[in-house]
Image (cartoon, rainbow, N blue to C red; front, side, top):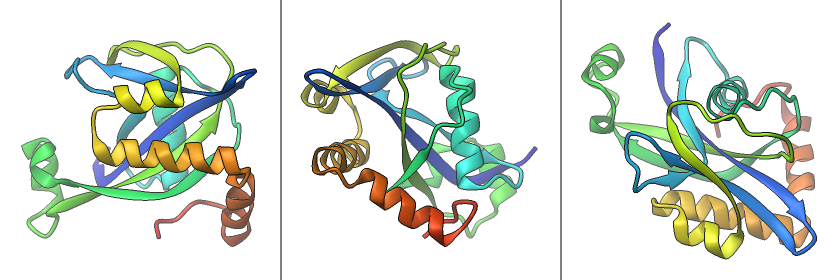
Length: 168
């Protein structure tokens, strides 16, 4: 199945007595890098299908819980991907968009071999540990929407627009 030139990044979160906690994963191929679940779309997957597959494969989350599409989008340079993928995509793909999502999850996590560890952390600790700035910004967006009580209303608006998520 051909890999699409699109990425998804999903932050798992849960609510605790003292506030929200965020699931942050340590990458096996780059141990200094802590992030949410991240990966590329395959075949003709939609953004939502790809996000759900990635959290199933990398975290063992099989649930059909609501998936919240965040406003944050970032771009990765094509050289961050394999030469095989770049060859399939062709010369016109110079940057690959990464779309951010969030899912409330309070169940078990089953790490794949793509990660060395996972931690549930309060916002400040999660923000400090996340490695890349674009991911820090998406985490900030998620945290602020949760604090302001607007994450659900944002999701309802997106669901009302389409059955499946589409890119902006």
